[in-house]
Length: 185
Image (cartoon, rainbow, N blue to C red; front, side, top):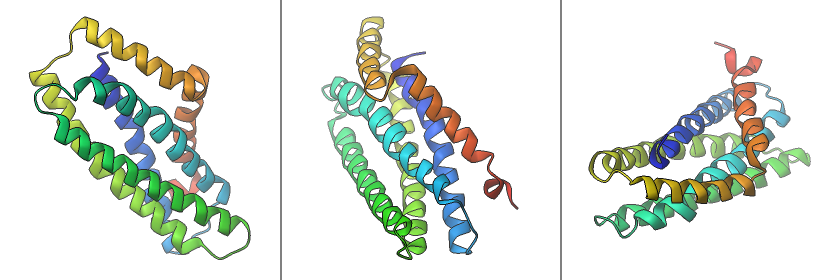
């Protein structure tokens, strides 16, 4: 798998998480009971899998490498701004979850930030996928570039706990998708 396709593959998992966040938000707005522990898992996955792992690969490896090629710098600048937006939404979600966990009624803000994150992730990955498709079409990475980027990705992998942790986070996305509240009509 190429370094570009690796990021596209991550987007599949990220979008699965976005759909879980959207479903959770919709159910919270309809006053359904969802275990707060499941919402904490969603929040943790947003922070660890999406931001610390996936966005790390983009920000510390892929984007710096592509920044000097074919006038991609403006697209990359926009993606970095969007990453910061995602972080801010995730932080507000965490703050609302902490309040809720401490007995302060915060279901509506939690639902709002879950919805905002799901919209963000859907729009953002869609734009990045078009960007990655363009690169795959016009500027395929050489084997040397691919190898260099994969080494840099490995650093991000290790920063979140290595293969075992990434695998665990992937399984947690599947766990959430199978929760009873996710499967309700």
